[in-house]
Image (cartoon, rainbow, N blue to C red):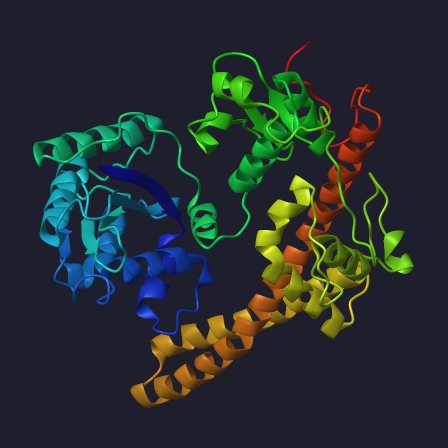
Length: 451
């Protein structure tokens, strides 16, 4: 049984050329491609390169050959490569069989037109293949047409080859969580899906009928659809509903009807939202619903109390699903709060001013480095060595500034996210206190169906 996925890597050829030729990696916009190339071929995962196969190119110079193909046909922008994987159930295949299947899949899918690297990784409990291939065909210069139909063809070809090797295939596939969510779940962090699952089980066990199960979830802030063959829920910040039976295959409508109320000793239950008991007064009023808070440092401090990061040693844990999912980002919020404290930035205006200042510093240094790069093309070998030192020194100054800029831009975006999340918590409390009122708030004002 094998699962497959495919995604694009975006960039510009002119940057790719410089990036490949520059060992100092001074082009962060191409970090994804460079990382993918190194990642899929790394010796520790591929038995020192034994399970690396190049199709229509040499594995030692694959990126350079991709560049030549792009230049030949003048296709230098947009998607510059594609990266995918084929993953097997633990213990189902040997390393050689996994690699043979991966090479066969790559040849059938892309081998007649594209330059491809196929690698088999042995460093996980499940063997898996990686694919990295050029977006431009060496044969006719046409770009790879990435579409849902191609994704389905990839699954179909993978399943057929697996069956030819006597392996199982997935009979009822459903969309897997994203890689960050998958690894967070594996590490035991709260994610959207395990937060959903815990709340659904509480709703089932604390209420005696599906009607009150649904009410309980709505009081927590969920949008629900308990109609049809598959019941669904979602938090309003997400676009798509999640089927409850994909969280746990047992949770069909019939199962929920049969198993309601196992902990409902005194009738049906209302959802309750807890709040941090030791919130400082000056932080309690820093936020108001539907108002963009400009004092972002204090907003971050308040949010740390809401999440149970502050005060140190607290045993408080949030109960709102909006906040519980945020617990997977504790390290991120802690880092950004510490940065605001260390830099003395109190307000949104101060943050934006610092963003502008840092961007100007980066632009000045980048222009200087560009002139050094141009000078290197005409310089003697001796002079070129001196210029390379200058370029290296400039890069050492640019790199931390770029990191600082990204961090501040993240804080600017996330402060708005914090405002919205706290407003959603407020809205769910309003609905719990006034279950008969129709929600017509700023952030979500929809009903999934009429009673």
